[in-house]
Length: 314
Image (tube, rainbow, N blue to C red; front, side, top):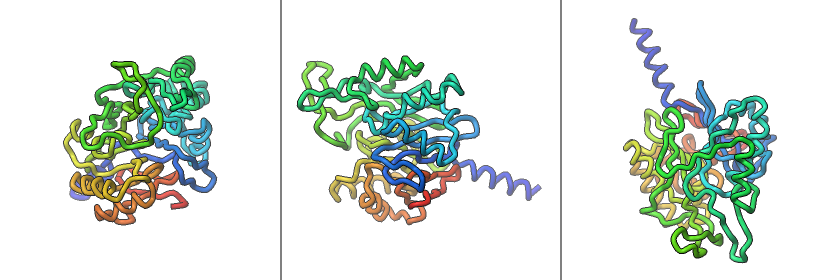
């Protein structure tokens, strides 16, 4: 009897998380993969697969999934972190590719308010999601392929233990990201600086706390972590994705690291726009060992028992 109790305890321990997470698109490539300035990651459980972001070029995620032997035909839900093309470029091609095998493949796409707002350059050129300049044309073409956009304001539980944050309230950080694009103000209709109000992240609830997934973290890492803790007040145990620290000052990086340390951070997989220097500095300040740090190359994995498996090139 005691033997079976021990086995049951080990089994429960290994079910720390409902999903295994594999990085499918980012800057650093594994052998045979397509590396690019983008992000995408796949959540996989025994019951379903969910994609977070879709890369930049329309073939990147398709190619890298094939290299990694990942079956994307089971993906029916997609979370898009924000409208930028390096996170949305693969969506329509993925839908077209897998729809013949599964009519619901890549059908339900979760975005936040403001995602379809038309952006402009200072010279007046249009900038939209995916590889489109016209945001409405992107939406029309996607819906023409059978994609349904679910527009969030508040958070939503997308699947068991997996949440999309919806709009993130900006209290500690106002805006974390590139400058130069303009968007029409909802009240005055005047063109104002685009601070990417449609930015959202995902959170996977585990026995150890939240695993925060970010495309770029334009709402701010601390703000995003606070949003997750407003849903369930547990530690921020780990973080994966882009956190837009590659151009941040040491003071900003240090402030972020101290907050994350106090929030319970033990795993950090900072890729895409995080920057290797920033990821190493965050890890050093928190006290995260190299064993629990990853720069998230294509093929990097966070297992269900919350262990990091590095890509072949890390």
